[in-house]
Length: 547
Length: 78
Image (cartoon, rainbow over all chains, first blue to last red; front, side):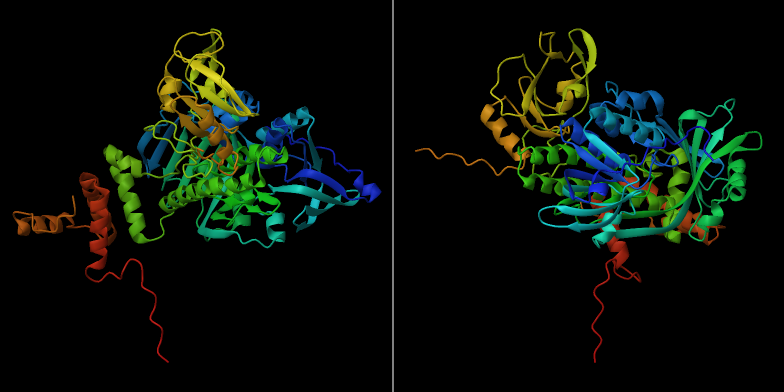
């Protein structure tokens, strides 16, 4: 059905173990070459860690699926070298309109703050992101993606994960030191381990229709959300623009809808026609029906198996928290696993993946659940309050914050992480916060602060002139100054230091995933060493007692 | 500031009548929406989350509403 995109077909990979019959051993195996698995493999490769990615299929995502890439996700892809490509192809939007019945209830602007490399959101079909990730993984020379390799059995042993894998030319056995389960909402690995995936199913169904609209029809690049529109009475509808002239339309269907019946073009086309009006020619690109679910595993780390993305947690889509949450999982896990594999950190560092990503997941689930309850009121009282909010919002600004058509994904602040070193600075980028971006000048050229933070090592961001500072191995100093200074980035707009919330002369320790680990009034080597050790999950250093 | 439950309205009969009259001619559903709009307007005016939580709790536990968090069911006697 799609006409704007043709899925690439990758060749099946048959590893030598199929013929030799020998057990193959790998340090890191990723199950699932989807958005999260590929991001994780690419990030590990940037840390110098090779991996094997197994996927039962031979192509990227069918259909546009996760289309809203949030600012933090773009920053992560910026770190991995794909951010600008996504920004160039994606549709940048910042205005949303909410309609109730026949009329517009209100419009909102995401009010993007100036001075960031990436916007609040872009819309981009998931298959583009995955195709570019496949290319980027190949370019590292460290990621081997094995298409048409299906895991048929898994055993989680103390020393290694044993996998039985089926290929078109036979089976083989693979022992992995670590298995990263990124095999999606219907994760085989999760089911093979018998792990409960608990939460809430909402008694509602939604139809997704990707529609190719004639180029002469000019709709604005905005997010439009309708409560109870005349063309789809009693339900809600969401409209989003994607690249290639494709529009995403979500129709709420109600619980009684028959998913198979609703996917038939004979059913979908009249719904779209009623919405677009009689004069707008369109063609269907892709259609899917889904049920809202909010659920997660009790823990994401199970011995040598670590779950990330939809295999670990599932949220309802309004708010764009599925794909964006999964990419943040990968961002969080990659540097930690790399540090453990390189012997720079104890295996206990991986416990912090659960400690950080489970609260982040619960935040996503909470926001998704509240949005879903607003969109699909469960009781007559809930509906009355929902409608009252929408009626009032038209006239009174006070009611608008109550309108919940999805609270759009914000990056998790890992405020309670055991890796953080608490500080006394009021506000700003408190420990656990992803580093704020800021415009800087490097040797007179415009640049962005985030491009210089984290990545392969920790960064000590020093707000002061370049000078030698004794730093632990694995920490690189970066100097940012208020005046043009050789060897430093120039915070010419004053935004960098203001956003971090520290005085001149202060320093900030950033993890490889660009989250703030600690802030210091002055770059004191002992305090930096202690904070670095803590951020690597090492036991608190033993302080020597005065003799 | 805690929720004030002392009498504060100078002419209670007039305001009660005003409230009832506001619903004149409305069916059950429209009446419910009117009350909902009124509650939201007043909630925003009050603004204090602690006061609002207290008001919701008192409204819930007064009169015929069952408790918000049902107590464990009594063990049936054999």
